[in-house]
View 1 (cartoon, rainbow, N blue to C red):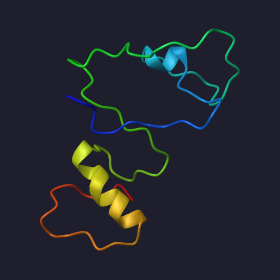
View 2: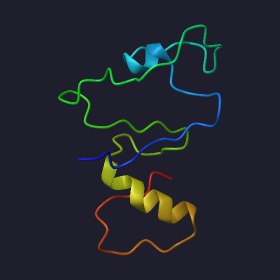
View 3: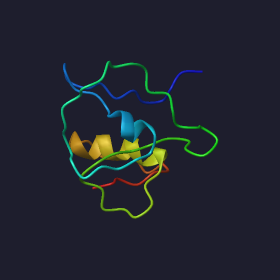
Length: 88
């Protein structure tokens, strides 16, 4: 049982300790002053998945929307049999 999507941050970047606990801070990027460790703080019973994006135009995005979104970004026709809808 592996995750469907793994976000890869650029070297020197990661999610904050606060965001791993579901806290949203005013600063988008901040200095890390603590030792980095694993961020497995979200209870999967309550949060089945998280999609963080700055381009969604859909009020209720779902994981099935990721494939058509990637296809659209790549300029590929979205097949009719795909259930999700592009987020852009």
